[in-house]
Length: 139
Image 1 (cartoon, rainbow, N blue to C red):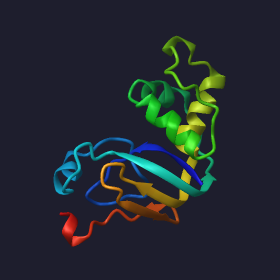
Image 2: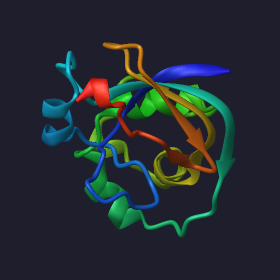
Image 3: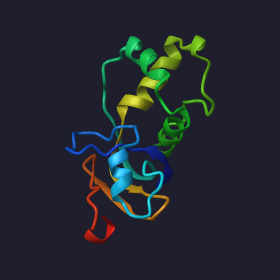
Image 4: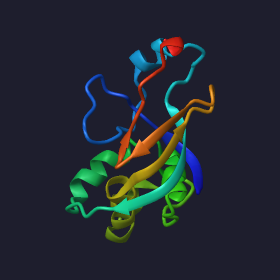
């Protein structure tokens, strides 16, 4: 089992994938939660899904990514090819972009748990979908 940190956005209507951004509304509803978006990953099964490589998209996304969160989350899911420190944008060569692409778009948490470090609340992930419904006493 792996453990790490993931930034998670919980949209009001759940789509097919966890987004990597904080969500103000989620922060306001959960009692006792201040940060509301850094969750630990306990991965039981990670799958790799092929996604078309688009270097222009990746170069555009690079500056928008919380690098430490992405590097930690990818290590947690068994992929340790990303550097710990944010690379210089001038060295975004094809080899680096392939690794960035794989970590950002092709690694999927299929089975496991997301854990809130503030409350200890555990959100199970089954078939790639996190169950983030709150209990009545948590709202």
